[in-house]
Structures are given as structure tokens and as C-alpha cells.
Image (cartoon, rainbow, N blue to C red; front, side):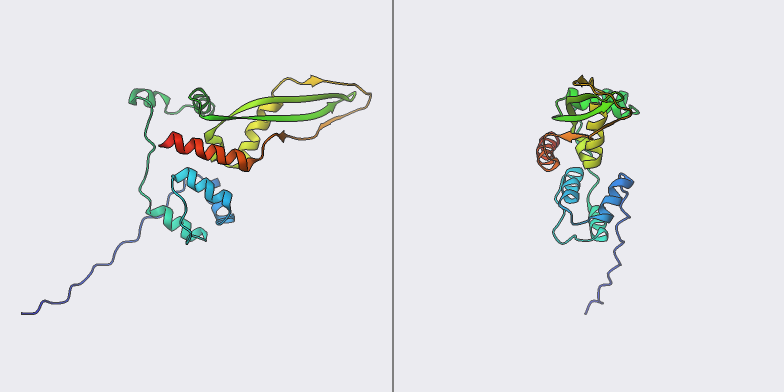
Length: 189
């Protein structure tokens, strides 16, 4: 007696990937093969992007196949519930309190009104979550804190107006990102 041929049911396609943020999705669409983009994805999803994923669609399909991974909590459930709904500032303070930060020196030089020259320089503790948001968020975070710091005044000269030279950071973003990736990997393992 021969068996009838087996009929295989079509496999459903994976559900569409739910992007954690529109900014991340836009970055992947603009630069899917950029080393920065791939490093950010590796940090965000705790796995390297396969070499054969070269387009936005390929990366999105790959992400849709990943199991939903929640990082292990270091805090008791009661504490986690108490923190829900906290602001981004409170979350960043918690990261700094837990030692999850890199210290970066930022500096802005300029002058005001009578050409009173000044310098603002401070060490900024940058939470690892800021690195996960990318270079623009990193620079904005540092610049905000440097601009809020006290200025050291120098020589004066008489003129109207005022301006500054913009933010300077002592270390390059690439080197800092590598150190941040190592710290994030240690934190998540």
C-alpha cells in the first residue's frame, strides 16, 4: 500500500517588526551598511547584524525573526514597578548612580558683549543609554551640560554682540563608542 504524498501547509510569514523608535528606523533606512549603524544595532539587540543583511528590508526581516529579548533586571520587581513612568532624566541619573557611564570632557569658548572672553569646560558623565541613541544625542547631551556650567572669564575688549566657537570634545566618538559597547556588553551579560 503506497502512502499519498504529504501536503505541506504554507508557513506564515513573521509579523512585521515593531521598531523601538522612528529615529532608529530612519537611521537604518539612510545607512544600512554603515559601521556606526551596525554597531548601534549590535548594542540595541545584543547580536551582530549578519553580513548578508545589506539593505533596510533585509535588516528589518532579520530583526523580525529575533525573539523578543528583555534584559535581565538588576532590580527587585517592586523597585521596577516604582520606576515605571519616570522621566528620561531620572533613568539617566540611575544609570550614573549605577556606574553605567563614561566621563567625557566638553569645552565651549566664546565672548559676550564687551568681548569678555570666556571658556566653559566640564567633565560630563554620559549614561550608556545616550550612546545607544547615536552620535547626535551624545553631542546634544554633552553640549547641554557644558552650556549649563560656569564660565571662566578671561580678557575683555569693547565690542557689541557675542558668539562662541561651538562644542569641542577631547575624545572622538568612535573611540568612546567602542568603550561604551564594551561596558554595555558587560552590563547586559
